[in-house]
Image (cartoon, rainbow, N blue to C red; front, side, top):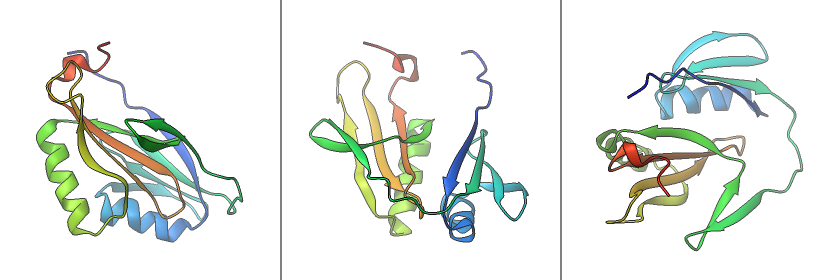
Length: 140
């Protein structure tokens, strides 16, 4: 498999300290550099930066997928299957309120995957997923 370059993603948060605690202590991301207005994290070997932005009144948009309301936008990481299972169990223990509980899509079919969605404290939607066969990541 080709080595993947780390992505850099900067997201807005309206409560920097609450989100700092969430990404560090709940998701287990190592904290990197920071200032009074931003904090960067090792987000599963990618660079995620939370930047302070005043709270917005923007309405959340969703699209229907598998009869579920998937928030748009959202971001996350494709994890190895076993890591996903452990991570999902850890999040349940930490009482994360899921938008979409962990479940299996396309079970027994091409592209079989586990997925889950939840929000950070500032309302940014995250999706984590895993494929039974990661080689089917872009399968049709």
